[in-house]
Length: 402
Image (cartoon, rainbow, N blue to C red; front, side):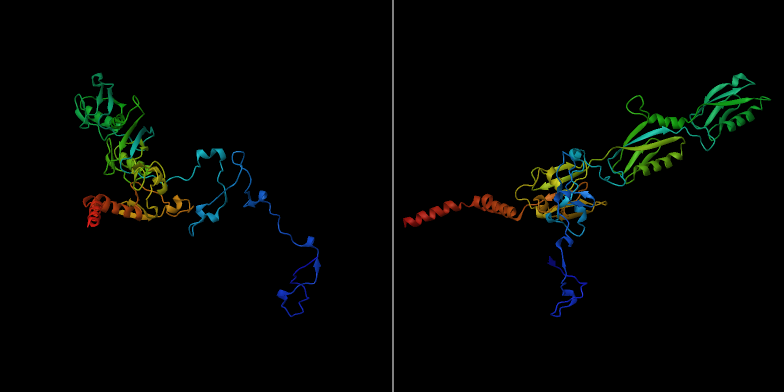
């Protein structure tokens, strides 16, 4: 039996203690007392997940770590480590997680190479077709077979027929042209009975298609273009088209707007062929300073790793990153990478993402700077000019002789 505190008991301490400190005289068996839950490390459950549950024979043990996304109020230390889902794919971790996309919208920049795929839509036109230069038609007459012939619309927009000479064909539909030819021939025939049949239409559209036709080589009806330093591309019949800073969808809308003013029935689809190269520069106290290509998301510590790591005497406390803004203005920030690179800070705020043309500088430490100064002034400088050791030896020898 064990006495317990019972705040509901009416019997209080005789010393006048408050009911808050009263002790009940009731005795309750220990088995009737509320017992704490049994702590079994093999059956801990957190948020419905058994922390010690094995993922399989390839990942039999839980991994403790930190989720840095939960450290919004400041950096977390190793003392905040807890079991986290570290090996969700077990032996398939090398494949990598799908993760989030790199950017919401990719925007075209200088030196990007874009492939433009041309396709005839074969859709019914909303407007009657008007003849254009280069179209081929067939003129036939039931009254006079000598009028029968195939004609091509001339560069000036006219066709030539016997008796009536030149007749304007462009900006006319086939029925309109037939009516005009019959009107003129009625001076010579009572009933000309003219029939005009289209033989080859959309000549200008076919010419545009021919400039991008690679079906007999490599590819189909496509054409590649590289964005110039002024941010434009050149396409047949469209000339210079500004695309700098546009998405592929915006480029397609711009091309269709320009193309629709001259042609109908052609669709252009831009496809990103080759991205412009992106580089970072790692200089200072690293093993292999130089220029490195950015092929994916890269952080400051990854950049130092690409350069072979830091060397003895590098000032990781004051790592500097220089950056150019969108208008080419210069930006700079200072990072403290010593803690994370020495394994002291698991969630460093200084582990930032790098941008194209960033310069990562690992400067010399103060001790190394002082050592260089001493070396330049004495070892290679003043010490090499004035032989202090010889002068001192001579003086001591002469003093001894005296």
